Amino acid sequence: MQPQPAYLLHKRPYRETSALVELLTLEHGRVRAVAQGVQRPGSRARGRLQPFAPLHVTWVGEGELKRLRLMEGRGSAALLAGEGLLCGLYANELLTRTLPVELAAGDVFPYYAALLEALPRPQARAAALRHLEFALLELLDAAPHYTTIEGNELDPQRVYHFDVASRAFVPAERGIDGRTLRLLATGDWAQPGLAGPAKALARAALAPLLGARPLRSRELMHQLAARRRSPSH
Image 1 (tube, rainbow, N blue to C red):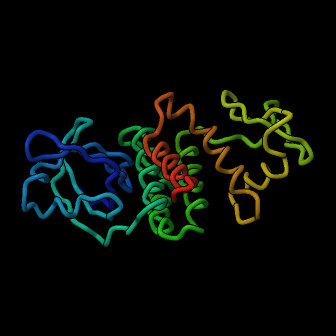
Image 2 (cartoon, one colour):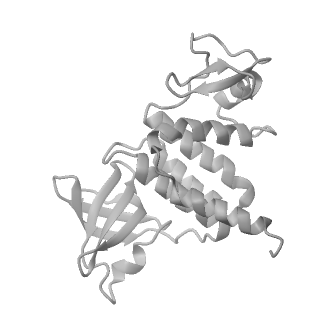
């Protein structure tokens, strides 16, 4: 096979010197593989196989669990810290939890690469995360339909609640107004006031895919926010 552009999503030790890895690849989506010998002291591959570092990889194997053969770096890792790092961990956890193995990833891969470029810049993080989340929802046929349940256009003057079952909207006393939803439907979130509604809608649409088990990265984000609010900080 031709070397595949890839990113490491998750890694855990396997046997004495190997690791089980989850990779996001350009053409094959999420790939599960064994990286043999990567935990051995002095292994050159150990330094390459890091989160947020662009890779070229090849693998062998017919089953769901592959064996990595080639693993080369193709650039420097994104330098992330604090909230930027937690956003990166959230993206990795989200993709690991929701992407089926070896489903072609469509726009998810380029949006993930763009996210890594955006994460060091606080003002760019939210939009990059939303683009990735909504690309994932589109890929998994779980994106919102920006209509009422009956298929009618949204009234800009009314307020709506997202109905998970139909992926459409129902009138409600509290929620997101129709004008905002129409703007969100365009995918252009540059206008003021869209960041909060876009985040709320993405979270509601992703919830059925994630199930009841909480995201560890989201818990860490809440802990960071609590520390920042503490009078001692």
